[in-house]
Amino acid sequence: MNNDQLEHYKVPPLDIAVRLVGIGPPLIMFHGAEGDHRIYDNLQDALGSSVTAVSFDQRDCGRTEYTGLAQPYTLKDVAYDAVRLMDVLGYRKAHVLGNSIGGILAQLMACHWPERVDRLVLGLTWPADERLPDLNPEGLAKRAEYSAMGEAGLRPMAELMSSADYVSAHPEILKELAELSSGQEAEARERRMAALSVPSLADPGSIPHKTLVIGGEDDQMVPVDVTRQLASKIPLSEFKVLKGAGHLAARQYPGELASMIADFLNA
Image (cartoon, rainbow, N blue to C red; front, top):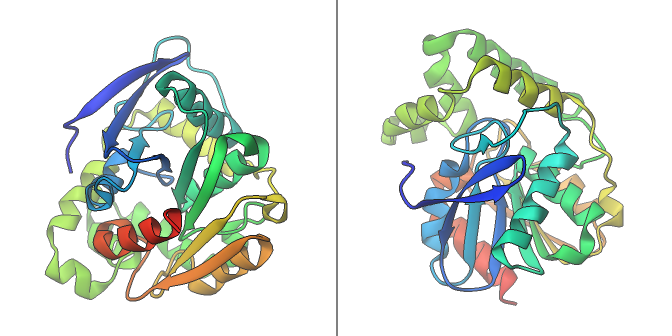
């Protein structure tokens, strides 16, 4: 993972760092709670020319910076940042993808700005009108435990987010996850955590778009039954399971995930 190929776009009060890959219809990509656009690097490359994959660093993440005074915000504000980024890029409408908390942001965008969304891809996420701690308290407890361990918790955290076999076969993931979680200033992290802690106001049942919901077969953070529950709430949805995938599906199986997404968007 790196920060090569980044472009910057003024979306007041932000200077948004964006990575654009491909030449097809636009696909806006929301990353998860911690980290930045880099989690999608391999997936963007695997999507090739089937879409113009637009990944970006959200507020208080990665290389996106404030051009004005930083203020408290909500997840709805972060979703609206993507709408305004589309305006700057000249996209009237775009496909929208979100994994994990990015899936909540994608649901918010679909509910509040439905006219800007073409098709929707929701991966490894849960219904926006519910709370993940209520749906998977054991997984969240493990995540909190490993996070509190600092460097000693890095490997068990990586195994929780993917699998022990994957980490053994790809030890570089430890460095990549450490880089994704480092460098965030305390004030930025506090603003981000405050936004994440407020329940989102979006009803998946009101989403009018054709939607692909993807569950990770071995996801320990958002169990596959939770993603299946989300799919059951969205009227025009289809549900697929990515075999062997944990919560880091975009990093573990970018080729398989890209094929699944491209087939749906091009149907």
